[in-house]
Length: 226
Length: 224
Image (cartoon, rainbow over all chains, first blue to last red):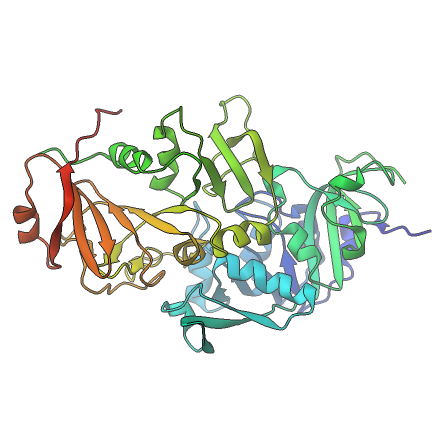
């Protein structure tokens, strides 16, 4: 019997060693796997590379990892965190390396890795400081830059519902990067609000098919089912 | 002379959004544009975080924080709206499916270059978000800005000296004094507020301004 369900966030993050490269879903403060990130903080994991649209503005999870210096490298489109100078402080102290990537390029670089594509050419960023050092190439009289696929070890994602095969559905704008990241890594861990029986997510409404998900963890509010 | 308020600039942008358009509104000032689109016009607003058919803000009592726009403001979804993941959202943006992108601007070059994401001064962590994708991907780029920077210089310039967001991408600049169309490397003044002439505006602007054939008065309604 296939059963991808793990008992707790702590069990799930035990798989993640120091130095791991993580994709974390979420946009602004919506759709983050906050309980997995919090469990990673409690576990004491260090020297992490985090790829996310933005550092979560919530008080749990990524905020604690950043505050305690556990994240050594952040790749994101938007590093500003409202209401705090945490990121500015980390950058000035030299303890955080930062790479800024345009949001669409970030999504596509993540998708590419999942699709077995080493990279792609895009017009986004041409002529800007973010094109510095990148390969430029003309197609049909337009200039493009090359953007490589992003390779990560784990994806920590958030969904509304999940079953024991790892099929997932999402809640409105909390979908964002989560399905893209799920496709991209060999080990995707999904934090779900609700565990449901096989077949109870209408196949037409499965957004992430279980093939992309290795582990499913329900958070405390969830109804547990096999 | 009565410079336009931010609401009046948003109103002016909204008048140029036609029925049936797919429109992305950048965070900050552009998000208010949807408030001023005439109710009789069907316009589909796209939000980069995976929404099409964005409706008005949520009533205070609802506060569903899984239904927000790109500025983290709780919004509603109109009947016929849809949700999708980030790659699909940026296929819409980068693949030329969005008709109009409305963005803020620090500087606009007369050739349409846009600088709107990074200021050299100040202590702020860098943030580009989707601006570079929107600048090159949308069919038209409308920018909203004050005509003059804080130091009194015009924000429409010969060459941008701030970090660029995109090259030759701005179609029209909507400001508190004038509406400017950027066509083939030239700046055409389409509308001016009362009390300003092309001549007086030119005196305070380094880049050469041309009169649009349909040069008209920029006169928004009083808005609160």
